[in-house]
Length: 191
Image (cartoon, rainbow, N blue to C red; front, side, top):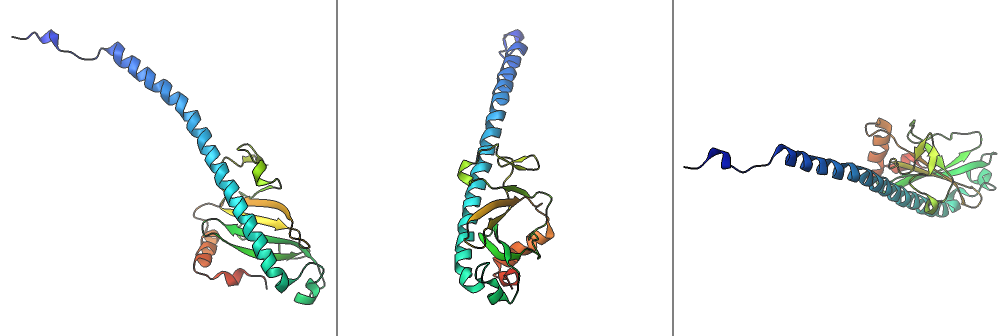
């Protein structure tokens, strides 16, 4: 007959040691994971900012013949006022954007109105995860869903990057995405 007390198992002390080791590993890995997540968001924002700028330059060059520069816009549009700025609003979700020329007295609204608009005029290659873009937001905290590039209407040089973080259920944002996906972007074109 076997003795009932000869059964093997873990003691309470051994289990507590294993739990303590796991807790230490988790405590070490959470900040590392968080730092890597912020670096990934930074990389995504840098890539989207570069893509937005490249698309903005291409759209600007393609359309300058059609719309003219600030100095010549009175001839192309029959208006006496000069362009205040040229914007290109880029949507990374669809890889497309909308070019608009704004007048100093005119409509300078955002395609998607959001409380999460932020701005930076620094070059994307100089961004770090802690680059502040306003409203106490840092570029490594969240991936922007809308990029607006502001350019000088005379020469197309960049004046600043604006980015926005609309909520996923924001109706206007989703409608613009649908239109761009379906090729209905002409309704957003400069008139």
